Image (tube, rainbow, N blue to C red; front, top):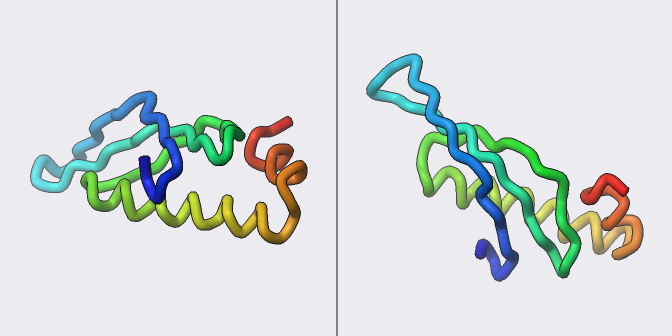
Length: 80
């Protein structure tokens, strides 16, 4: 849970062009008020970076709900 919103982490892939500086491709799905987002990838350096990027994504979802309403939000983030 990030900001009281469930987040599914489906896969984590490590990429390291430089062994001292690995990157991770994290495949996630956000479930906001019962609406499941599409599955997508975030590129992060560590757990702190992942949480920060998830907070940004959740804020975007909240803004979409505020501006367009719940039905349109479901269409936009759920792809349906």
